[in-house]
Image (tube, rainbow, N blue to C red; front, side):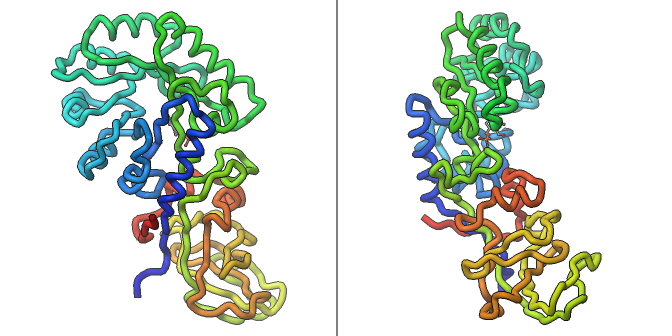
Length: 358
Ligand SMILES: Cc1ncc(COP(=O)(O)O)c(C=O)c1O
């Protein structure tokens, strides 16, 4: 029998979520962020389903090539740019757009001889202090790129550090910094990832860059995708592979950390951290068994977790256990584990069979 842990991806939910992005940012083009294997959903199938996006955002050339080799023709943007000079040939051959965020990239792109020059996005660091040029360098960089003649179009972008905090003043400070230094150039801008698509409409500009919300997940603590009319695309499930009776005072699992407060009926589910279920999920984390909430008991093992079925006498071997999905928000599971939904989605491992539903 095949291993029971599976992820079912609802491609109609992805398309619905893209439409929601367009409803929320009606005047913007959409860069659908599909890096990290489409946030664990499978980059190629996600990209195919999101063919209505204006541009696909990936982290590196390998992800871009994976898409092109699978026949994806949508425009693709390298969100971190290129890491080696040799990638410039591939950028041209595969018709990719590139971010540039530091001088070494600026010099390389200005010195390369392209037959078909690429589109370039100048990334400015307006407060994240991660990737990006200093904002005041923008006019000189813009001029250098224009004069080089090696790019076909130039846009600018920045990344927000705190847009998931709706009262944090840094967001508008970052936005204003970008606006003020690019004002004279009159070029297209991109600022908003999911949290700003939903919560900071004044930052939408010509291009929004959502990732998480496309997968139906909320970027805000204490909210779920459904609160924003989004639909969870991933359903992570497994099955009960054993049921046993333990006595009051018995313990369950590694470290004997969970002690039965009463005689208990314990279900063993075939999913563990080896599948991407979070190792730090504490006892009490909900698991849905045939639509009803059961509680995780004891530590998460590599291949298994245990749940308390004492109050669910009708549950039986082979019953389906939902670990997260539309009926059990991943946001809730992440919060229990002191993790973020991004981490859980990307953490799904290769042995989880992914199936797609159209
Ligand atoms: C540069 C950039 N833009 C957009 C996104 C998408 O962010 P989110 O998934 O929060 O929408 C990311 C994700 O990390 C990113 O690094």
